[in-house]
Image 1 (cartoon, rainbow, N blue to C red):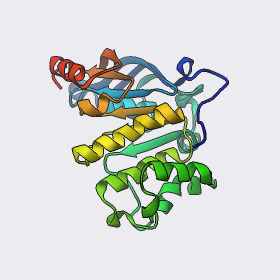
Image 2 (image 1 turned 90 degrees about the vertical axis):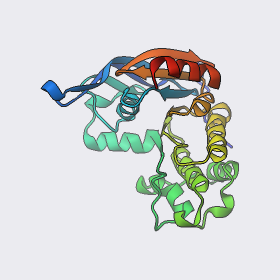
Image 3 (image 1 turned 45 degrees about the horizontal axis):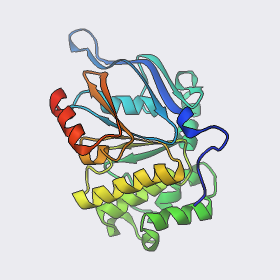
Image 4 (image 1 turned 180 degrees about the vertical axis):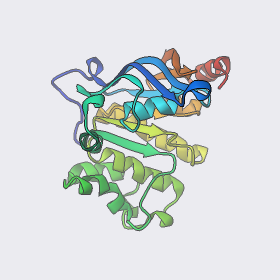
Length: 253
């Protein structure tokens, strides 16, 4: 496969996305919920970050706001050097389409399209052609090269998620966000999916951020952010599953 790494600047010194003093409030008065409370965080390019925390801790809200899927009540989000709050809806849509990849728990494949057509859909919408060498490398690495002519209902859950991952990576985005990517998979298939995501970081220079409840999945990351009550309460570098489980117990996940 081609190398995604920008050779002009070491990946470790660049930030693919960052949030500064991010606050997200839902409702008002007695019904007010502060989903994010003054969060400041950066996501290094070419690194794998996992976000964990109890239900209602703000982890999905954090990911959605950094990805441009939701707006902050106050604070700023940058993708690269672009501040999202200053973009129109159309500009934000184009930025997400060109710079961001998404992987969801529910796969979100179009049932009437083949795997190949689902894979290239973001590029088709943007009027772009896939890089054949890059695409061939992706589908071969993911083990779906012989399934591209099948529709989603003819694929297993693991195969559907592999198609979704290839779709997220085919445009060579600056950053990929994955929300519980193994939530609908058995443990073996989920482990294989997480191994590929880590491979995409190590071998391709991809930047990946996942939200997960699973310690085994989070242990594939370079670092884990733990959230509680809308705040980042700890950051763990070079995590292990056992260390993650111990910390999760402490914060009540």
